[in-house]
Image (cartoon, helix red, strand yellow):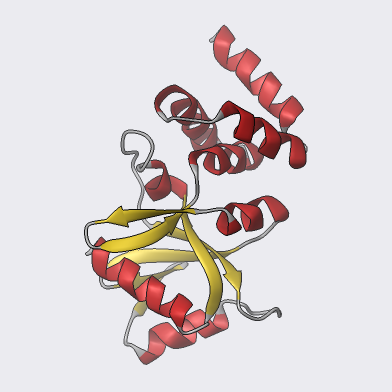
Amino acid sequence: MLEKTLKVIEEITRQGIIKAYAIGGGIAATYYIEPMLTYDLDIFFIPAKEGLDVLAPIYDYAKERGFSTQAESILIEGFPVQFIPAYNDLVREAVENATTLKYRDVEAKVVTAEYLAAIALQTGRAKDRERVIRLLDEAVIDRTVLGRILGSFGLADKFKKFEKQFHEE
């Protein structure tokens, strides 16, 4: 099912509906750490056109192909997909620097572990803090790259506090 979903997302990109994308959130994390519970496929994307409703072309595409919606997700080949516009410079850079990984016969763009950790740290919800801990413990993280990302986006001090708290627990 996910394979078919990824093919549709690639098609959306090829058609120019979105400029670029990368899988983020819990499913991206499963490329680097043991699986975590997640209910949907988060797709961070850079819109092809700027404007107030950058999601409209995606929803139009989905409607034309008979895909239904469920809450904030589009059910693509039975899999809930949440399209999230790159909402800040960190997420935009994460999409632009995504790595290509293979899932069965399909290649897909995925946010790197370093950017996943930075985005989770920036977001700061409980499940995001847990994701940072697991990424630091289980994933192969390039600390130099992570440090550059954190410094570029004003997260270095937040990360130091996080690490200090994490090591005290």
